[in-house]
Each structure stands twice: as structure tokens, then as C-alpha cells.
Image (cartoon, rainbow, N blue to C red; front, side, top):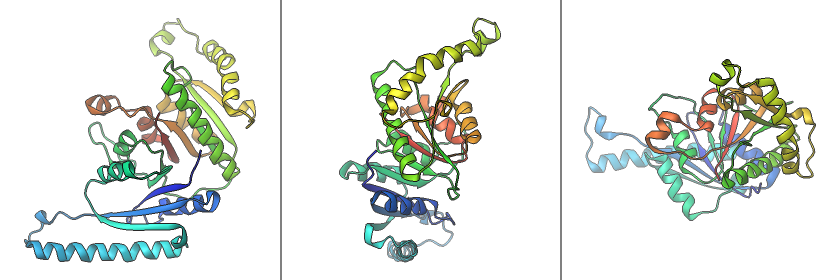
Amino acid sequence: MKIDNILVISDQQDKQQSALAHAKSLVDRYGAKLHIVAFNYEHFATLETKLNNEQQLEVQNKILSSGKNWLDGQMTKLSLQAKSTSEVLWAKDIVGWVKKHCASQSYDLIIKTGHRSEGLFYVPTDWHLIRNNLVPTLLVAEKKWRKKQTIMVSLDLGTHFKAKQALNQKLVDAGISFATSTNMPLHICYSLPISNVLKDLGVIDTKTAVKEAKIKYIPLIQRMLGDHNIPVENIHIKAGSAAKVIPSLASKHAAGLVVIGSIGRKGLKAKLMGNTAEGVLALLKTDILVMQP
């Protein structure tokens, strides 16, 4: 995975500045260049004291100036000035701005602190971002990476769609890149979908199904890994829903980063069904890199 240009969405509310800290580590490891953006917005219409247009503009400029001073201070603290550009924007629609900006720029990665607040019809910025953006997006947990962690890649090996098969290879390549640069062990996982009804009726034996899946898919995974060899015990095939299997395996094997694909389902269908990446995001307590075909 090539990481030369990174868009960083900074969050003044994040006390640990996880996104900027991760961006700094990628600058050090890859020599990447950063464009750091911070957003400010206030609803003047909700104020009890009504402001005219001139007063609103004055307040807006003061807020933006304060935000610029804060961001400059963070960049200085992390010694990011030489490898970075930055801007502080007055914008309510963060995702809309990111989509428009990325359409005219060439980024290899977006970094943002993840906010895991979910509901059936409530779709936060993170979900909109991974649904609607074609740039790989790293949602970082609000904590620092610890030592002795691993990189875990989740694959959809049962798919017959060429786009998803190609995405699997992109995910593996990204996992290899991060595992190599961080000197962390790489793990590969696949959640084998099995109908609970057929399992309960005894039509499908889970142990046999998993055993057969390992015989079929482990050689495929090894070919996808190419020259990057990993122990066979680092390849995990487990029966169950991806939304439960992936967080479980990530926790068991101390994953510092989970790499996963998203098909970007949209509309009401997305709100009701969600994507695997979004289901995982609700339960995962670590960083997640989301990539689309």
C-alpha cells in the first residue's frame, strides 16, 4: 500500500489528538506528506441574542482564528510543520467537504479519530465517511498504540464478485504494509457464514464446515500473501457473523489495527442493514482501516 499523501481530519475535542499522533507516526515511517484540516461551525440561529450578519462574521473569524492558533500549536508540538499544510474551515458538512476536496486531490489515506456512537437510524460522520469516500480511511481509537500488538486483516473469501476478490488483495497488501512498517505480526481472518437454522437442525456441522473451509482457503490466502510468509496459526477461519467474529478475534490476538473492506451500501437499505465494516465498528475497540473496491 502506497502512503505518500494523507488527509488528516483533526478534532479539537480529542484530548489525546489520536489522529495527529497516528499521522506523525506515518510521516516517520513512510515519509508521507500531510494536509491537516480542522472544522468549526456554530448555529447562530439558536442563540437567544440575535446577531446581525456583521456580528456573525466577526464571531466566525474569531473562532477560526482561535482554531488556527490551536492547530498551529498541535503541529509545532508534533514537529509536523515541515511535512504538512493545514487549514481551518467553517463547515457543517464534514463528509461533503471531504468528498469534494478528495475529488480534486490525490490522497492515499484519510485519518480521523473514530467516534463510536450508533443507533438504528442515526448515522454519525464516521459511517458517512466510509460509505461515501473511495479513499482508504483509518479511524483511530482514542488511545495510543501499545507494544506487542498485531495487525489483523479481515477477508471475504466466499465472494464470487471480481471487485470483492480484488478488494481482498488490496486488504492483504495494506495489512502487509502496516505489519512491515510497525514490525507487528500479521493475522488474517475470515468469518464463515453459516445459517443458524441449518446448524440447529443438524443439516450443517460447524466443525466440518470450518475444517473444509481451511483446506480450501488457507492455500488461497498464502498465495495472496506472496513473499510475506506468516505462520499458519495466524490464519483464522471461524464460523459466525463477521460483526461478532472479527471483534472477538481482534481482542483475542491483541490487534492494534483491523483492516476491513466496505461495499459502501447507501440509502435506507444501509440504515436498516448496515455494512459489515459498520457492524464491526460498533464493537471494535481498536483502530480500523476501511477500504472500498
